[in-house]
Amino acid sequence: MLTSTLILLFLALSASAHFKVEYPTWRGDSLTTDTASQWIFPCANISEATSLSNRTAWSPEGGSLKMEVHHPWALTYVNLGIGTNVSAFNISLVSGFNQTGNGTFCLSETGKENLKEGLRKAGKDAKSVEGMPASLQVIQIAATGASLYNCADITFNATAALLSSSDCQNSTNVGGVAIQNAGTSTTNPQSSPAANASTPTGAAGKMGASLGLGIAGGALAMLVGL
Ligand SMILES: [Cu+2]
Image 1 (cartoon, rainbow, N blue to C red):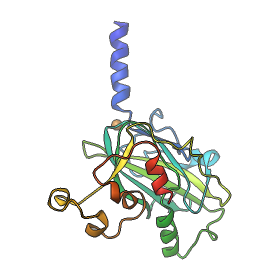
Image 2: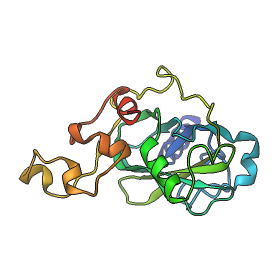
Image 3: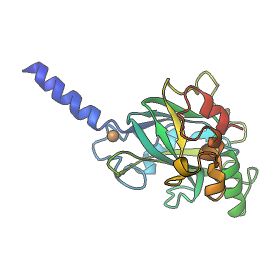
């Protein structure tokens, strides 16, 4: 009886495993907070007020992002919005990519070029945002098509360190694959994703050479850090 209860509990927990943002520290624990749900846009129904004490100092040139992922695959997006209580996460740090495998997924220097460009469009740059609050929004879309959301609040700080390479490593068999246009892999296997899309940058763009192959180990983090 106890055993079957435990098994049911385990099944319930694993079904709702979703994902966790470990670094920068997430806004709140959307897995255990009663009122939270990762299905709820934009930040899993966790309000920013709870996070004033866990704002992470993060490089205005793109800091590290470390996640614990639990789905076999998930289309993944990382966005940033400047300010507090952000509702417009309008800087896409990485081009959407297919995050594959379960375990730890880490980007060392998240979306460096896209952040630079996003700040420029907002009339800002890495220097002028020093000390400013911002929030990261991570979205994963898994097999059912519903979106999962988590946010992490940061303060731009030029002296904020990146996670060390030993701390920012993908688990074995965890990686990312660029999203490609339907049919391109069979009709024109040589073409790069850059030729088919409007110059992807960030994670997916840097993965062009490995299109169709999962990138294991820390390779993705290294590529994105370029
Ligand atoms: Cu899930």
